[in-house]
Image (cartoon, rainbow, N blue to C red; front, side, top):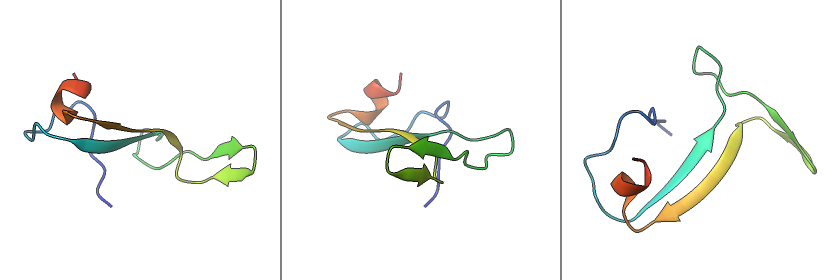
Length: 57
C-alpha cells in the first residue's frame, strides 16, 4: 500500500476511505499497544467520507 502525506490534498473529489497512522521522522510506522495486542502498523483512525478532498482540508 502506498501512503500519502496528509499535506498533499487529493485531486479526486468523491467518496473515499482513509486511515491515519503514526510514523517516525523517517516515515516508519510506530507500534501502538492495544487491548488485544500490538498494532505494528500504527493505525490511529479509519474513516469514510462523501468527499475526501473536503474531509482532509
